[in-house]
Image: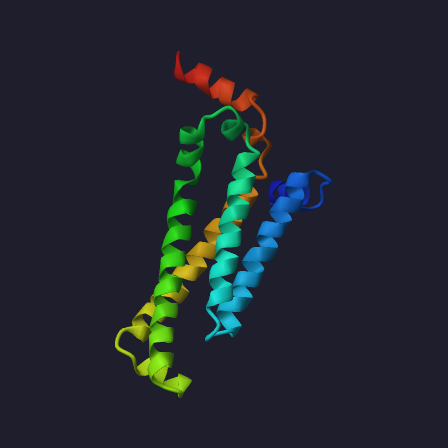
Length: 164
């Protein structure tokens, strides 16, 4: 528990520019959570914030040692699930929004959208998947705060141990 708190402090209370990026990523995730929880009919801001979260994640990846030296394949092995989960959640949000728009185009009563075939199922799946999306993105933000991603020593040591 002590190590987790020290990691949290080093990420969010440092003067390092990357710390501000981490903080901004977490703020975007909280904003996305609020948008998806309280603004049912306004799904366009959700998609915009989801794209911003992915851009912030990519900017954090650009600052790593592995990205700077061109070892993007190694880096993608560490973060392939984040990319998959982000893309899947974005698709689910777009499908749900398209279902809402198609209903709104045919009716003026918004409450009837729950009667649309498959809407409830897609909505429940999207909300359940959202919890996984938030957890994996926050975990990734904390993981990207580890110094090993920004220095070459751990990667050189890993390479040397792999060639023995």
